[in-house]
Each structure stands twice: as structure tokens, then as C-alpha cells.
Length: 381
Image (tube, rainbow, N blue to C red):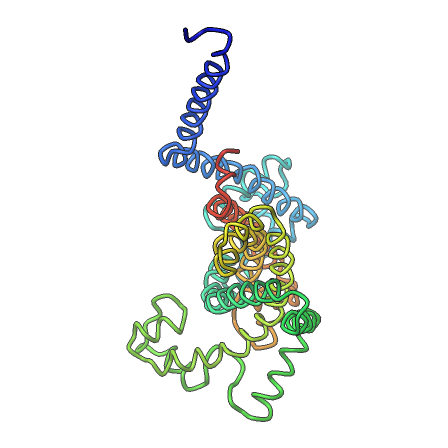
């Protein structure tokens, strides 16, 4: 009989196998593509909703800074430089509720911000929003070339340094990364300008040479995006694109040398940690080659800290690299912010600060989404 004393082990094995099958079915249902897709959408929606209180906190901080100025000083930000009559400031204060209780002021300030009214910039003699939009394409063009080079080179050198640990390659990479990270940005920019502009006269500061700038400002050239490397192609003027690329070389080198050094150091540490994990040791024990272990197992997990770092670097560059743009007279967001601060352009500085906060909040959301693809375990959180 099946249930004799000697057959109880067989019965227990049947129960054990059945429990394993149920557990396998449960795990398979959890990790099914449909269920994972739903969890991914839920994760993204949840993170997007968390942006709302963060953005409100950013606006509250900026609004609190505006309260450090008197109603008369804040009213002056609405003037566009025309001659002031004695009754102008009191009328602006009354119209924009600048002397009302704080919660009423915040409501009306937020209403203006949502409509794109950030005040008038005394530096650019334009509305603040128009000034920011005018400077954004130059910064995007700079970041568009600097970020891919920074991430690709930093990750590659970090992996090579970790794989060849304690060899001449590792020592050389670490030595160069320390030097690169230690270089002051303004000093490197001035050295490059002194050599390639002052001595060799190969390239000048700014976004374009004088002749190309005159052509771009004429009616013969259409600014589709404000990014000259792209607009030159769209207009069929490759000489504009080539000149814009030539003027990008020195700023991009200045940015990437410092940032690559940081990514190399972080990637090396993360890669060494991943190579010491149990799954990589098991992969080697299974007979996988070194390239398979590094590329398919270790590197992907080591990229998780790089995702955060790259998001922060990209957001920092998109909000303007002040020193680089100022040294190379590159008319981007950093150049605008620096000059607005030097000329005490309060609306311009506050508008730039609000823009910076929004960019960093969005960058954090994108980093969280990238995390999900790099580490699927987060979809179950």
C-alpha cells in the first residue's frame, strides 16, 4: 500500500514537489511580462506624483527669498526700463498684491509663474522667461556633446581600471583621474584659451566666428532650434555647422576632463565591488569567459551608481556651467546667470533658480526610471 510506514518518504516527496510547483507558479506570475509592465507603470506614476510636493517646496523656497525684498523693490521687477512716474510703483504693488498677506501673495505669485511671468530682466532687457529660453539652446548644444563623451569615456576607463586592478593600466588611470579631478575649471579654460586662441589662433571664444555670426543674424538663415550645429545642417550651410563644432572643442574638453575623472573613480569602485559579488564568482565557476563575466554580469550592476551621478551631472550642465561659459564667452544659461548676478538682476537670478530647481527634480525622476531598467528588483518595491 502507498501509505504504509515505509512509504511515508515517498508521500513527503510528492508534497514537497507540489509545493515547489506552486511556488514556481507564484514566482512566474509575479515576474510575468504583463505584471512587470503594470508594476513599471505604477512605479513611474508614483514617482511622477511625488514630484508635485517637491516642486511646491521649490516654489515655496524661491517665494521665501522674494520676501526678503520690500514691496517697492519687488514692484521694480515689473518695470521694463521706461521712465518711472511717481504713481507707477504704488499701482504695481496694488495690482500684483505685493502688500497683501503672505498666503495671498504666494497665490498670485504662483499664478504669474504658471503663466510664464517671472518678471523683467534688467541685464538682458527682456522678460526673464524669454531670456532663459534664448540662452537655453547654447547650453543644450554644449551638453549634447559633453555628456555622451563624459559617460562613455568615464565608464570605459573605470571598467578597464577595475579589470586590470593593481597593474600599470590601473595606476595610470587612477593617476590621470586624480589630476583631472584636481584641475580648477577656470584654470584649465584659461590655459586652453592661452594656447589655442592666444598663441596658435586656431579658435576664438564664443559660439561662432564673426563672419558666421553675421550670417546667422541675417534673414538668409533660419533659426529652427537655436542650436547652430543642427540649424546649419537644416539650412544647408555646413560651414556654419563646422564653425560651431570648432568653437565647441575647447568648452567640451574643459567640461569632460573634470567630469570624466569623477565618473572613472566612481565606476572603478563600483566595478570592483561587483566583481567580488557571489554572482560573478559563480559565473566564473560555470566556465564563462572574462568578457562575459564583465560585460553581462558585473558591468550592468556597477552602472547603477553611475546612473545617479550622470543624472546629477547632466542636470548641473543643463542649468548652466557658469565658469566654462563665462571663460569662453559662451552665451548659455550659466553666462546669463553670472551676468545677472553681477548686475544685481534679482528677477533674472530668481527665475534662473526656479528653472534650476525644476530641472533637478525632473532629472531625479528620469534617474529613478533608469534605475528600474538597470535593476528590475525596484519594480517590486
